[in-house]
Each structure stands twice: as structure tokens, then as C-alpha cells.
Length: 548
Image (cartoon, rainbow, N blue to C red; front, side):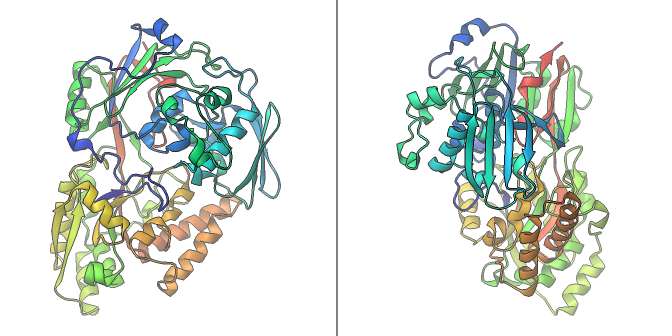
């Protein structure tokens, strides 16, 4: 099974498949569908310069306090603003946003942010530090899907309207990248409280603002939500009073187009301006299409083979020697030939985009003779198992059925017989979460754009636990666990990078993972657009786009 794992045990938001319902969603080619009340700005923006986008709208809610889905971030990133941000596809440099500057105390426990002056919400209300304090406390107290992002935060304070302070219980070097997440944007306190919002200790039961936030914006962003029809369409209009200056676009219409082939055809015909979910075969066809720009961006993910470590679940595949043999049996060059343009071979679990990823030069090289020898020396014979994937998943840049067949063929060459099974999403997700999935195709799409998000692969943490690889499973697991605890609080960047590389090296050689590749995301757009960028955190940033 492909598991693009995005959930913590206590969260519902990290749904394992970004496109769980993709197979059943219809291609929508009609006009705008509306829900809720139009905002005043909508009338002025009707018609005019409209950007039309096709993507998979796997959205449960638009309430920033209750979501952390990438498709939701795509909308909330331009209807709300965070303290800090990344610019374009540069994920190395934290940039100012609502915070003009910040200071970190020598012990790494206090972050003090100076806020941009004269910023207003869509309602016209001024944005102050008190809005940040209320919004962070609401997120923590309603226990929304992004609340875990603030784990380790002991308090938030607003000593004056232009100063916001975050205090930590222990150093958290990933805090600044985490703060780019749209879930950590300020809400218009006055408006949301009037609509039933609550940030008190009992907010989980008392807050009633979600319905309002699903049909109205309460942020400072470049666009204002006009309408949202679940599983169909979202319409946004430009914020004419945006503090950075209004967009040149009047409207953005994002439609739920499930089929990537339909997306490719529609962008080629000019029915849409941007297609966000383009598979490898369509990307190759569109490379030379007239009037189309094809952009390939590395996704913060690594596609890998996952294997349950419990022999009662995966049989002989729980044996570390079998995993070692599989590592040498895979024809990595052949796998890469199947992937979308721009995909990269990965030596480890941490995506190569991050400093601290295992160097690509260390990637395992195919050696089937060595793989057979490992099995012979371990006296392991009659290797048979079941390998799961889901054809309903449109991620990873290729047809997962083809990838599963490739893995089946490679392992057959060393005497391992796999039965590959295409199971319904709900069935395989349940198996995986219960720790009962024998093996399949896995991945982890970054929740926030920092390498620390991949500590979930450690023994006993989310992914490791679901493969029944616990912190006390073996001397190796205990050593990896200790290394992980050390790396997540290391504040010296150079030392942290070295520790992450060692951790990635041990995860990919001693853990129940066989890293394959970092997928590239291909988006296609009309050549009259400028400023189109893509990042894993929020996909396309509509606030930077103009039409020539």
C-alpha cells in the first residue's frame, strides 16, 4: 500500500492519502458554485482577471485552528498570513511576514517578534499581538489538528500591540519553520468571537466558529474567501486593502478535478490556467505543448518500501537480513525511469532537499548477487509475502500499480515471491494504523518544511510504531532512539546537520524502510502567467501570480 502518512496517533488531519476519494470524484467543468454569503469585495471583483486552478480538493475544513491538510494550506496561505514565511521555492531562508524581525534568547527558550505596523484584517479591524495570542491559545485549547505544532510552548504573551512573545519549555530549533504554517496565523479576534469563537480552557467544547470560517475569511491575506462548496469548488476574491498591496488578480477559482489526465487536457485547451496534479506520463506529453509551461519541483517526501517488524504480521520479512537483501535487489535505475521528470534518487528517509539528509552518493547500488548471498548465508528460503498499494492514490508522480509490479519483478529475481494487492483506501489505512499491514509503498509528506518532521520514522514514533518497531525493540533501536532525542534539541546548525545525517543513515540501513526516490511534483500552467511557484507546504502561492 502507498501510505503518504500525514497523521499522528491523536490526530485525524494527517490523512494517509491526500487523494482518498479521488477515484469517486467527478470532473467539474461548470461555472462557479457558491455557498455562504459573498463578501463586500466580491461584487467589485466579479468577472475581471480570474485565475482558474484544477487540483484535488481533499479538504475537511477551512478553519485554520482545525486543519493541517496541504490542500487547505493552499487556501489558508493566501487568506491568512503567518509571522514568518518562505519565499517561492527557497526553503532555506526564513523571511519576515507579519513579523518584521525577531530575537531568540541565548538559552533558546524565548522568541520575541516585532509585528508589522498598520496591518488590517479583511473586516478592516487592526491586527495586533493580542490577535496572535488569542489565536494560538484557541488552537491549543480546541485541540485542533495543528495543535501539536505548538508542543513544548509553555506560554504566549502580547506585552504590547506590536510585540508577540513565545516561551518554550525546552529548545525547539524547528520553531521558525513551524511558524510558517497557515494554521499558526492570527484570526480576527473580534469577528471570530462574535461568531462563537472561544480560546478558553474549555474551547474544545465551547468554540462554535468553524461553520463561519468555512464560508468567511477572518485573516489578513491577499485574498478573501467568497464561497466554498465541499469536494467541488472554492472561490476567492482579492483583498483590495491587503497590506502588501492588492493582487493583480481579481478572483481565484480552485476546482476539484480528480483525474490528472483531465487536468492535463483542460490546461492544454485553455479551460484552466493551472493544473496541480500532473502524473509522469502527462508531464512528458506536455513538455513541448504550445502555450504551456511545465514546472517540476521536488516534493518534501521520500517514497519507500515499508515492512512490518512483527513476524506474526510480515512473516520472514520481519528478519533484518531479508530487508538487507531487498535493499540490494531493487533495480533503482529502473524505478527512476518510471518517475516524473525532476524526481531524485534518495539514499535515506529525509528528503534530499533538506540539509541533514543522507548524501545521495551513499545510496545503495543494485547488486542482486549480493542479495542472493545474504539470503543464502541467513539460510532463508521460500520467501513469500503480500505487498499492498492503492490505485486510487494520485501522488508520488507515477502509477503505483506499475511501481508495485516493478518491485515484484525485482524481488522475484532473488527468489522472493510477492503477491501484490490493490486494496481500497479505507481497508489499508485501517490495517496500517492498527499495525497490521505486512508491507507496501510508504511516504511522509511534510507537515511543516523542516527536517525535524521526519523524526516520526524513529522507533516508537508514528511511523515506527505503526510498523511495530518500538524504541526497545533491539540495541540498534535503542541507539537510534537516543540519537533522535539528541538531534531534536541541538541548536548548533552544523552539529545538528551532522547528527541528522547519522540518524538518516541508521534509519535507512537498520530500520524497516527501503528508500527509493524523492518525487517531483509537476504542475502545468499557461505561459501568460508569471510568478508561479510550488512548495509542499501550501502548493501554489496565488499571491505571487500575475498575468502578462
